[in-house]
Amino acid sequence: MSISFPPPPEVRRRATPFWKRWWFWVIVGVVILIAAGVGSTEIADTEAEAVSPSPATSTTITTTTPSPTPETESVPDVAGGSIDDATSDLEGAGFIVSVETKLTNSAAKDTVLSQSEP
Image 1 (tube, rainbow, N blue to C red):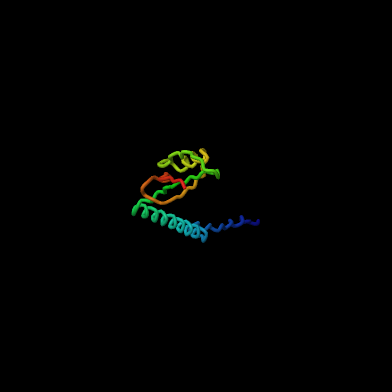
Image 2 (cartoon, rainbow, N blue to C red; image 1 turned 90 degrees about the horizontal axis):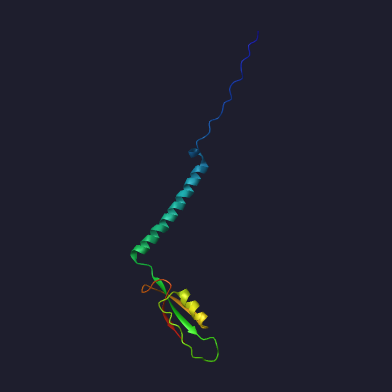
């Protein structure tokens, strides 16, 4: 009578936990660097705003008539309006518009402060 034994069970190597693998720490490092970069720009932006309010842009619009012969036309008053509305109104009336933008705290952003005719 011969006795046969079952084969030995397979020995499975236990998987290494993910926090002990090199790629996990590379990902953690990249995430920390990104978070530090985003945080530093947010801090710089809020500190700049806390020190002084950001200046608004103001615009001076200059109009000229496109025709070579001088004609007398009344130029619509666009001071105090928005740049887009002023430009479209003046171009619709047949004027050539030149926009000059300056930084100022005296008016809201994208507001026409003055206009002039050359």
